[in-house]
Length: 467
Image 1 (cartoon, helix red, strand yellow):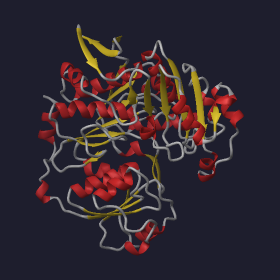
Image 2 (cartoon, rainbow, N blue to C red; image 1 turned 30 degrees about the horizontal axis):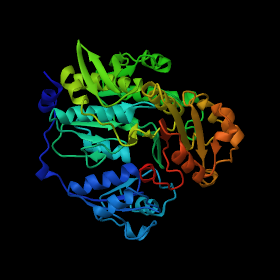
Image 3 (cartoon, rainbow, N blue to C red; image 1 turned 180 degrees about the horizontal axis):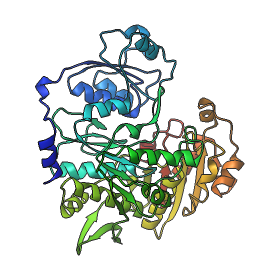
Image 4 (cartoon, rainbow, N blue to C red; image 1 turned 90 degrees about the vertical axis):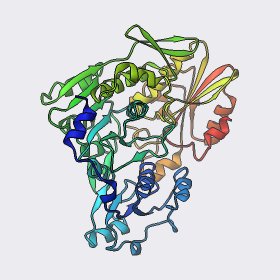
């Protein structure tokens, strides 16, 4: 019996006409995940409002298009009353947020983002993809394969995907939900990692590499969250995990109540600048590249087999998988130069991105430009984790904005500290965004440029600049 059949037999099939429509207010609606949830809820017929003290693009335009943009920026407790059924609290808000305090005074139900997702999908089969790197891509691959097989599903993924209007979908008729499982905090008043809410039936862990030093000040504390995640997998559930990760080897060996299956990279070759998967004596030409992506694809394949998608069907679907936005996205590809754009910010992600470009650009020189933007990457205690992460680049550069450290209330860091941490020349450490722009403009012809950031180089429109 396939898992699709199993779900139909064992779970209540929702009748959309019987679902009560609610009034829902999102505090910190401008976040990447939060504004997508707001759109999904409005599409489902709920009355949705929200607030935030700052809303940037593309969230601003998308909220405006759906008539969800707050009339006034800021927190307005007078808008909170007992006619609201649900409050959803985003991470951008603080514990003393005026709207949150008003909601608590009125005893309104306040959900964290992941708690609300779980509540909406607790009667469905849940797939959760966790890990310090690659989880967006693995989630995207599974979603792409499921859509190709005409399987209806709910989802939450951390990037915009081609063919999907939003990063969140909640329906009353789907029987499966797939979530990207983030280990960061659930909300300002719920200090648990998000992925501890989801209680998966099928799970992936792509790898464990210390991150979020502002929340998990030691490697041991960070690693423990993945052990806790495994313990949330439903009894007799399934976990697939990357076998060459030493930390995962130790963590998984402690768990006996679930079915575990390790994975490694699918076999592949490069031919005429194209990636070809080699599987069961067949070849599948796919648009993605880099060994880390063939590890990701192997994880996605294992999950898809669990839900009844055959290997050939999965790999055939990968031939049209274009990837997620800002995940090794190609912004320019012509005779003069090729420009890659990636969300990489943690050490393991940066190293994987640089190595992937090196694998593909064997003959070309590579310029790699990384922006430090997260709490961890701007922490002098964490910086040594980046040692040699840019080693495969011919021209490595690192940019950080001192004003961001002030905004995040972090101690200042010196160029020399960053240089020492990355093991690159201090002349290649930049603090002026215009100098970073010049690197993008002037990188040599007949070379490749890799831009890595979870920020925007102090407001630079990278896509327009590259054009």
